[in-house]
Image (cartoon, rainbow, N blue to C red; front, side, top):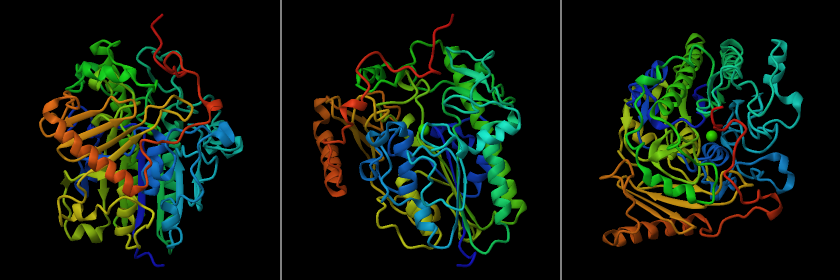
Length: 503
Ligand SMILES: [Ca+2]
């Protein structure tokens, strides 16, 4: 193996909507490094996650398979032991393809695949912290906790190191600057570790794969100053469909994490947006640092750089916030920028494509650009013909799925079949959705029960069921947790950091 193969840097943020990057049309945010990345590569305007939850989506990014195929259908919690949900040993991940091809493999940051400290095929450099239970098997595996201790910083709780300053935190809007200052904040630490890793690879014989993942801009809306206060809430623009109360209907689904936005005033929602975008600008700053080190060490030209997120957040759209049993655009459409290595750029790259793309396409695309054989197990397609302009479409439809927020929660299973013009969501609870995206891109008119569209709905359902048959998805049968791990039905779930009324 020579370094003729490009390095690969894959960035995965958490809960970042597609419309939060200036290059993607968000005029209220500053994302100069992401915009620069988009300028030298391809911005995908219609890239979709497979499921709007961490574990299923992240496993899809890394395996090229839908949740019904890789099996991690909901968020896992390893503490449940054998009855918990785990990524099966035989699911091959990106590093399992690149490692044997001679790549040095690194994983830095959030994992959330329920394998404890094990990062599967990512073997050569691993930096862990414990954002979610189960990301570290033993306390001593938590690299960030050890770093923080050396700085005299005590990190506690689920969101280790990214918790807000308790004196400045507003429990109603869940907004507050971080307790840990910028220099020692967890994602800054993860970025510094990435820089160290990138420097260590300069002059090495073999190419590297670095996957880097952070918790931002996931709620609660916490990040270090000066990014936290970077935007004035009054300047924020709420989503065009934030008054669409038809979304309230989905609060009735069994899943209990989705929340109503109607409980907030306009300025409260704008405050959440200001802090959310502040966290996006913080990520952008970290991207600038990594790109700078790649450039300083002469490795940028030979690097395939990919920026994406696991899924989105409703952030007020359809009068809802956060995520849950819904497959609205704001939840499933993700940022995706791919900047190919110089050799491919020299042949001409389309700066922007509206072609449909899915998270499951990343593994096939990376393997293709690296000149490696395709992954037999992956269900996605190679996106590089969209980037070179060879075609404006590599797939007729994208699929998405939903099972439950957590494996322990009540299920509200969904399946989606979406073309550029139509979206059909089939619900096991019977409350299906059909949107004519071409005429109603904001998804405010559900046509599923409209007799005028019976034929269209049947056509979409047939395409979905045909895909399920071909892909081995047993829908409408879905995996069921053991009854003893299920939380009892009751009031909506409240996370420790969740909206609490003002005192
Ligand atoms: Ca997530």
